[in-house]
Amino acid sequence: MVEQKGTILIVDDDDLICQLLRDLLSRHGLSVIVALDGFEALKALTSEEIDVVLTDVNMPGMNGIVLMEEIKKLSPDLPVIIMTGWGTEDIAVKALQGGAFNFCRKPFNVHEIVRIVKKGLESKRLSDKQREVLPFIELNLSFDIPSDVRYIRSIIWHIYQMSKQLGFPEKEFNLRVKLALDEALCNSIRHGNKEDINKKVKIEVQISPEKLRFKITDEGEGFDVSSLPDPKDPENLNNEGGRGVLLMAYYMDKIEYNEKGTEVILTKYARTADTAPQEQDQASQTAS
Amino acid sequence: MEIITKENVVSIVELNGELENESAEELRSNVEELISNGKVNIVLNFAELSYSNSAGLRELIALYKLANAKGGDLRLCSLQPQLEDLFSFTNLKKVFKIYSTEEDAVASFE
Image 1 (cartoon, rainbow over the protein chains, first blue to last red):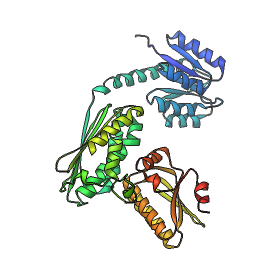
Image 2 (cartoon, helix red, strand yellow):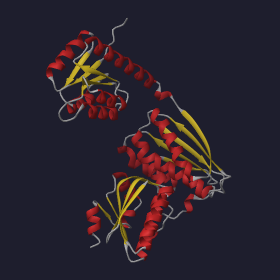
Image 3 (cartoon, rainbow over the protein chains, first blue to last red):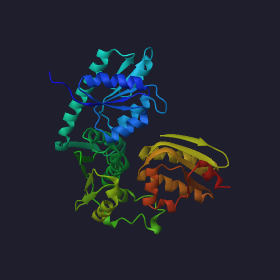
């Protein structure tokens, strides 16, 4: 059997425990990095390629459960193994519910800890393998919904779950895509189909880690977007409506309408926030 | 969405969750009831509000106009960053008086 390679981050404020674990795991051919508290561990995670984290629960400053929660925000697939004392099963349960890969009790059973760490390495290897194909996946979804705004939240939730699975940035979705999609669906249902329950709204979705594209088509008579008054104009600020189209243009990278005004295509690229203003200008131009 | 109303000289309405099509209607009936009972000075506390779409903005403007028509005002406080961004971009910061804290918003009526 091929010896597993990998780098283990050990987090414990007890220097002696760290040394014991370092010696043990090194003997099994693994690289070991030691952090004496949670903050040091988070720093190591940003600078080193870590495959498994092995952390104590009781540490000053940041306990192991909080550290695990922080790690999950950075790297959801990174296996975190929690070390607990005997008689602290409630902590172990809490850790597992919070997403811990596994737990082991102190004082250690040497064979058990090596076995759990190796399982963690295997899990990391598999998730890395799965991620390798993510850039080549494109998921196509289609919804045909009656003209009722109550469906909007569920539709957005399904699209969010799929885009999250494929690695489209969650923050980008929650801060921008969600609102633009909400507005586009609301427009199609309320202004396009005039909430006629017999008319459908078709939503065609393309999801990839780099891009989200939504084509939304209603069965209404169509409307001319350019005829809408500018809701940012001081004269129109007290108008109650008319902001949906503006928000779509602000939060998406590209908006296209068909000639009849019954179809809108929204595109959002996964990218860092610091490139947003320029692209937002372009988006506004496309929408106007 | 959960709406908690504390009534005094100034009524404070705490919004929780997301302000969208359905919850905006709920907010409207709560605030309209306050106004019809003569409670026309209102602070909406957005500390626990994470999202608003244009239907939410529509109701806020309608309620703002209603409170003003009855001689009062509707002011906002404690906006989360994404809602700050929304109010900035739409120029609605020029319509609403917005405060960092509930205390500041309440004090502004004195």
